[in-house]
Length: 419
Ligand code: GDP
Ligand code: IMO
Ligand code: MG
Image (cartoon, rainbow, N blue to C red; front, side, top):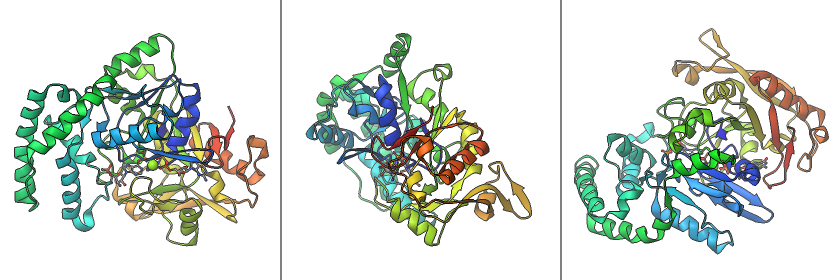
């Protein structure tokens, strides 16, 4: 299951729904930049690292190698779940996953400040700097915690470099290694029982015919390779990332569900062709409660972009779509949906290869009639107003794959299942 837009499509609730029939739920990339919301009755959970399948006692939640882990946040989330009556003890963690260190958080903060108006608008969780070190081969991994001498050596080597950058480039105070060593080695005992070869764990589950659900974080257009670079995250949220990040082969994946809102949102900077600056956009923010789960930032909102959704179909090999938040569109007289872009006299129906076009284009909208009815109690497709059904069918037709689920409210059961 992957986000088909710029994140916050409702992946947490989709995972929670699918996990009912899964044996393993695996996070394969990203870190605590993710904020996945699950609503069960009056309870609301916001998860950033623990896979959203944790709510079911029969599910083994797995944090695989491709995730970057802030240990303080992970342990805090485990404690939060325990405190609220959810048992996280089945959680398994890859020893190959990289750690987000205090200097990564610091660098994320000062680098964004340094960029000024060119900033990416990151979640400031240290994600970019942690992945930078991973690819520079100077990262520290979960397994290093269980080898204190190695941990200390690696930390001292990397910290001497980071301190030069912090002090000489960014005018910050240097960071000491002793506090970090004692904090991190202090976490080791509580982590040890969770650590496992998660690639092998998943392989073994698949051999035994178990169902494994991969829970993407972020979204297709935030992908480091296929998104709107540099306004992206530092990992691969796209479906291929599930294979890389969890250590399985691509042929082990047989269905790829793309999650998209009935409109679209984005947090942080970067091009956004269908962005609205009018009352319709304000209404999406207010009715849709479009404020970041992680940072509380107001999300930028706009009409559904089918050019981007067709692109998401292509780069993920999507087999089907899950459309969320259809209820937020109730009450609009007309609903617009972008089927193409126009820029400098050219028309684009495919995602443009030159990113400049995304900044300068005008969306080509098709207008569809809206509906006034409250749809939050619909459970069958036939219970939706004709106009809402037409909207969903229009999406199917334009993207070329079926919309098998439509959600009409945040609560676990507020969903129309079609297939
Ligand atoms: P994620 O990051 O993709 O998991 O999405 P977030 O949890 O950050 O944001 C989605 C928000 O929309 C959450 O507050 C959900 O509770 C809410 N939500 C999900 N599906 C629906 C829906 O069908 N209708 C409404 N009204 N809210 C929804
Ligand atoms: P979920 O999983 C929406 C965005 C940030 C910023 C860019 C880079 O809840 O959908 P980063 O901290 O990753 O270096 O920030 O990516 N971003 C998200 N936007 N949902 C998310 O996660 C996001 N995770 C990162 O706002 O623009
Ligand atoms: Mg989110």
